[in-house]
Length: 485
Image 1 (cartoon, helix red, strand yellow):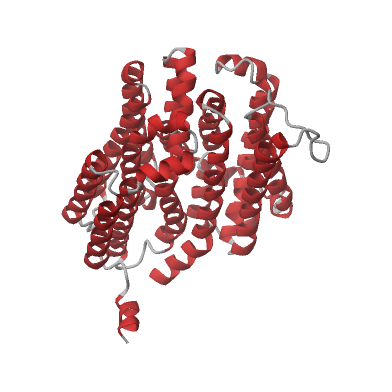
Image 2: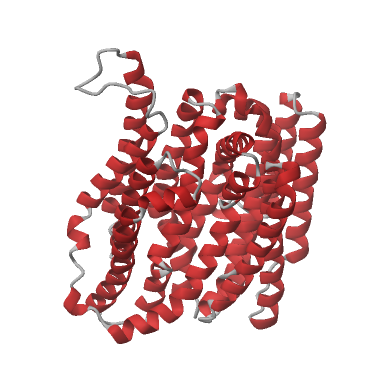
């Protein structure tokens, strides 16, 4: 089972890590070119994009894998899932383009209709490609999956470099293109649009595998009954993850809000160091959970995977916290953003709690009680909204950071307690709590008092890493035996 999981994570997880690295690498070029106020529209629109993406796919990706266990007619399953997403996307595209001016005013961005239109087209193209990517995973075609995903990232990255680094230094332009300072951050949106368009073309064959004649209304009703709670949970999750940017925009005076939004949005990108591992893990683990749910030792396997997940995350967080000052300044490349660096340890641990929650969610997904995820996510969203609403006017993005960690902590605790009542699994609760508490104490104490001592911090990291590797048996004994020989 572990070999199977490793294979899935290596094939698809590594691709996810690579493609997530592209926007992460792009961000320093954007922060170097623009200050927080100019960066704000990028953070603003892409925070809303997450909500729209969840609505357009409405849980069909996870639902597809769940129904693939029982549905014998692949053509019917593929077509039903694809046209469900396609219909939602066409409706969204038509509505958004028709009322683009009104939407821009509603979102307090009346001068940025062009950017909003570009984003709408990007999201529509990405939604059309969502199920074809799922089909590639289902049909075990990792090479094409990786090729298309990485091509998207490369094109996006190269165009951002062209628009923000090369064109401004060429007064006569390049291939007919001339840099327009007034368009500014819009070039980042254009780069994303071109990359999404190329992805759509590369998946053209997969998109048209779906046939309308194979769409099944009866199957769709069953799938939507399973998927809509996942969508609701996803929406609540996005509120927890990105909608604090909207609170900053609406609850603070305009100029202050733009500055806070820009700083928070740019600094939060550094959390990608933690998110990368979580996303690769989740992408590999979700099909694994379903395919091994009926095995006799499934519970012990899930518990062991939780131990590994927590240990690796804690090592990553300690490393980041003891090296945070130089990593952050090197990454942001603009002193205007440095004020936001101290919130990062909070966001690192918030990401850890979210990852634990996603692991714990296995119990309600396997028992087809996805509505539970909606309840828990709504609880988390309520915590996020309440803290942001009441404290942003006083504390700005600090309130957003604390709201994030409080929300994920509550979701994690509630999911654990509920899961142990309904579907108990032998998690190592006390051992993992100790590991997390030690990680929090070491990271925060070091960052608050010794952050300029590079060697001490990395010595602490090495010691803790060795302890975790040994106690959690992160290196297989068979591999250790080879080294001993």
